[in-house]
Length: 146
Ligand SMILES: Cc1cc2nc3c(=O)[nH]c(=O)nc-3n(C[C@H](O)[C@H](O)[C@H](O)COP(=O)(O)O)c2cc1C
Image (cartoon, rainbow, N blue to C red; front, side):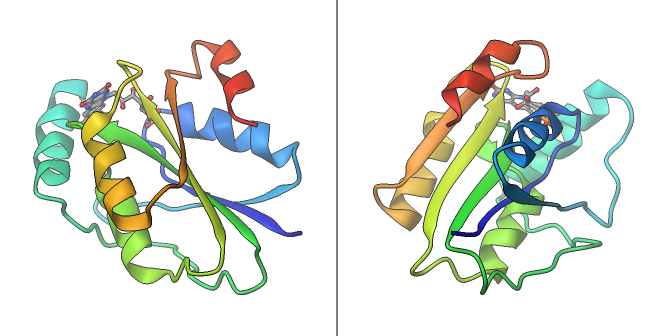
């Protein structure tokens, strides 16, 4: 069974999850936005929070949407302004997840993401959604992944 982790990460928490899943035989595809995020955290909050709030679909610089050979897909997103991020909005718009085993890993500061969970359940039904609180700092969180 072939397994793939597709994710976006701005500050490295998603990368820690990717390293963990790589050791569990997942192929990894990290997506990047064409339009770069600012370096300053305050400006990140303003820009990222606004774009996530309007469910913006960011242009991606490197997304391969061919997932035909995979049986299981995990999608990883940070939480911005309670929601999944603009890069992952684009991913979800451009892949067909029918007939795949789908789950989500959401990284956030609070450990809670009710808005994002609701949006994903409305779209994908009763899927597995794992919410991790800053796994880069709290490595123990990774034990909840698989
Ligand atoms: C623009 C922005 C908005 C954020 N909004 C939230 C939020 O609404 N709730 C929350 O718990 N964490 C929020 N965070 C924190 C991130 O979700 C958290 O640090 C996450 O682990 C980042 O993942 P990454 O390191 O893979 O980018 C926000 C961070 C940024 C940069």
